Length: 172
Image (cartoon, rainbow, N blue to C red; front, side, top):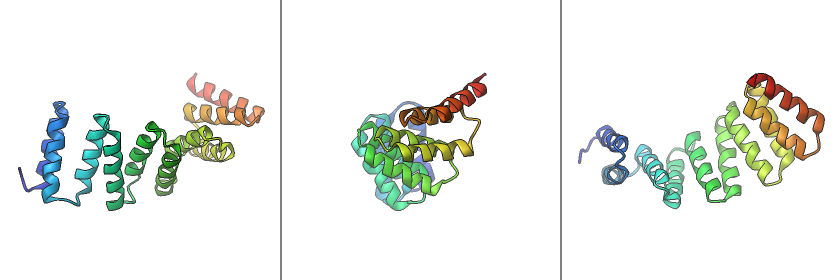
């Protein structure tokens, strides 16, 4: 095993590319002995374990990555996805809110947050998040469709209809 971090990461990438997830995991675990605080190794383990369906391990890896690199929105997003999959919607919302705080101009994150807020009945917050996403990306039909759904949920039918029409105009 190399003592060079980039070589370890390249070897793990090569193993992933050949679908040897167990080998890549072993390579990264071995690398952690030399580089215990490498966020790249830890996040890599999280991605491998996520691909293997080992969600609790993957979540723990991404939580560790967040401790080491709290300003990396992608780690919060990965954790949010895992938490949503494991039905921890409150935890997923918290993780996405942190990602949005780090990347406030990212309409996809705001849209995802709006969807989760809608699922938990926090519909006014969902409208706000989705409207911000639409304001940033008015050409994204999926965001307009998500906004239309939550507007319909709260009985705001005229704006919901307009959002659907805008979405259909984009897709035409």
